[in-house]
Amino acid sequence: MLNGGRAPYLEFLRNLTPQIVLLTVTFIYGKNLEFSRIDLSNFVPTFVWWVFFGAFMLALYVNAALFYERCFGNWKAWRTRLEKRLTARGILGYRRRLAAKMRATWHFRFVEFVELILVFYFFTFALSAVVVMSYFSAAGILRNMHAG
Image (cartoon, rainbow, N blue to C red; front, top):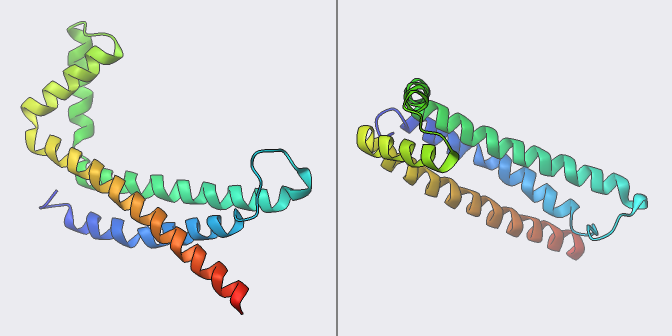
């Protein structure tokens, strides 16, 4: 990732801004919504909230998938060969296959295994930062709207 992952990393960080904006708007629209009961009189704001929330989730997924593809794109062929090998050896069941995949990754692609773990924690940290920044942005916008 350090060699070929610099440009995808910076692009991933640039793509966090639209996610923050989408989630901020979602928080603002969701301020007065009541999700514990069905109320058809509140359909339009609820629909708008779902549209923005869906757009945020899609942006989150696409950004993470693009980063993963660009940094670990050569894994697809290796995983396909590994799947065929596991099937040929008769390793069945989700847990057994997952354990076999993790052992193979640890043994044959140790550096990438460590990078995948670090990227997972990085994604978790980035998502947490997006949620916190969106929350405080929405709170600031709402405070300014009521003050002015």
